[in-house]
Length: 240
Image 1 (cartoon, rainbow, N blue to C red):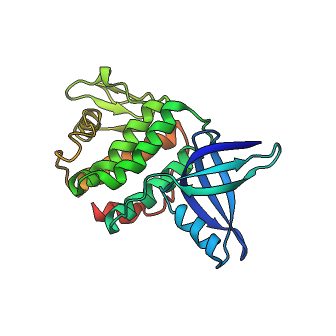
Image 2 (cartoon, helix red, strand yellow):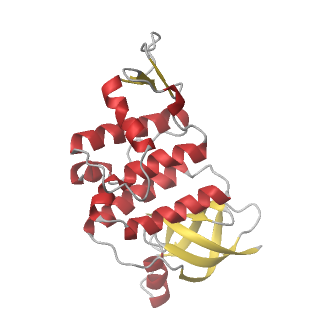
Image 3 (tube, rainbow, N blue to C red):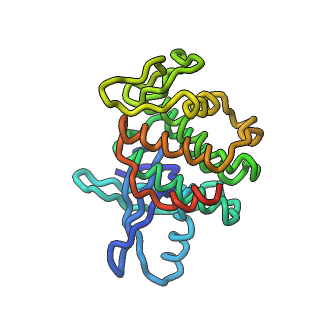
């Protein structure tokens, strides 16, 4: 079956001396894995350049029934080709690894696909001030598309956030469930109010960003999939 698709490259892992495996999000098929040549030829180098983390490309997918990996034909740029500086590359590496874990068991979905490709565009277009908060904004917003968005209607001043139930409560859970205390859980309220237009206006300290990031990753681990050992996590924590 041949399918024309817009794709987002996520993570590349070397399989052997001849091939690498690239994880990709496809607007037609969702999460797929692709075998690409690891050789030094011109075409192999061109394809690898188009499949850098968080790069958008277009291709014809040859998806054979019963095969875990697909083959790509006619690989070409997908429109998002602006160069990225060092900080953007670090965030791109982190977001690519995050998406690779989180989207691995997801099916193709119009809203989810639009969000993923919008993230790739934002990585290249937001201001430096907005870039510092972008990973938090994306991770938080994705909870709504995946079905476990924190219930903001339950927030009240002085309440803590119950990580398991995804809501605020005035009394911490007594059964040992993880929760975020009232002061630190205010950060989730702030993230809920962020938009693409105001993301760069919010001033957070490094400690505040890291507390929010750690809390969000734990929240995903509880509700969706384990997120330990993410590539570039410690660099992102230090950078911002």
